[in-house]
Image (cartoon, rainbow, N blue to C red; front, side):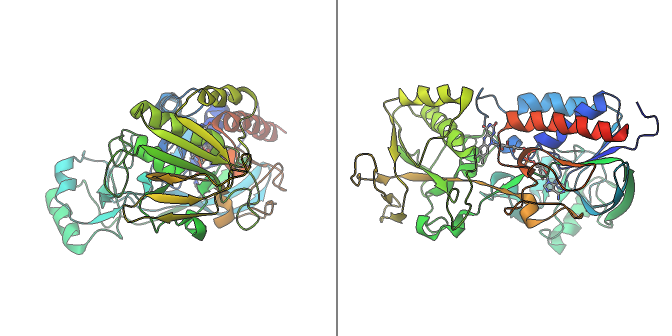
Length: 417
Ligand SMILES: Cc1cc2nc3c(=O)[nH]c(=O)nc-3n(C[C@H](O)[C@H](O)[C@H](O)COP(=O)(O)OP(=O)(O)OC[C@H]3O[C@@H](n4cnc5c(N)ncnc54)[C@H](O)[C@@H]3O)c2cc1C
């Protein structure tokens, strides 16, 4: 082991970044983990359960966060991004910037303080279903475990209330952004993905009809910490939906949007069909698909649902969705196996939107080789820089953790050259 090895920089604190960080640190290497949100866990921590085992994500994350917390070789910076990277393998320099959280950590804050505030912000964690106060606790995986003030959302009057009512020294509205540079030997890009914006699919009327939601909104509806306390309810009237459609490939495998398969949306919908059936044994579900892609060991998850007489699979691409006066939804779709148009009225529709790499919107500040969609698929074109998880390609958690472990090893090899 090279005693002069510089740390490994991991950009992104989702399951890919957390895995790469603990794997490298636990064999003795220093890691600096940079995450733009105020919490760790990325997209997976926002799910209710994850396939194929159907465990809540907190199971695996509790172990990972403990491994990070107990390892002095890992330094975590949240609310942080990498602004510039220079240098070469073994000797990179990264400039990091951190936005202020305005909460010092000198005193604990409780709900009596947040509740006094009128200022609210969209609840991004819950896919903007509902709001939080402008002083909010990001999630159980908040790192450090502190509230955050959303300065833009906080009114001047509430700023005064906050500084007057919080324990002296708990809030520092004068806190400013930090900037610093670190020297690192190798870099792992684990910046993950965002959902394809369903508003681009005008024919599927997302945003025009309240009872059309996306698969990520469904995750939050089903989650106990979500906006409905875990009850899957129709947004228009808060009634439990009885007849739900899933529209697969909402944007994916479509030359006008995402020409590629997002890889996980079939399994995600099958998983969500189980959420619905667990809550309501009478509920009926129809899944409209192009192909059901559940490869390898995931096939049995699909086959189990084929046995469920309340779940119908229809091979057909949904061409359009309209709404009746009761906010019910009518799908324009042809069953391509039966060669007919089924009666297709539902009280809720879930659009299975796919995966867009975050690097398509915000590239890493280094001259890397992306594919045409913005993924760092395979090599990055720069020695000593690797990618893992959904920064690399659409994939599930199991693939992500394997890749993250593999690139941790590649980075370690670079440090020992
Ligand atoms: C609807 C749906 C349901 C799914 N359900 C399952 C499931 O049940 N089981 C399963 O195995 N897989 C599931 N997946 C896939 C799973 O979400 C991915 O495998 C997983 O999120 C990949 O982890 P990641 O760390 O690569 O990316 P992410 O989870 O996206 O994490 C990336 C992290 O990087 C951070 N970041 C982004 N840009 C920057 C930046 N510039 N600087 C610093 N930080 C940054 C982000 O804030 C985030 O914390 C599902 C996917 C979808 C679409």
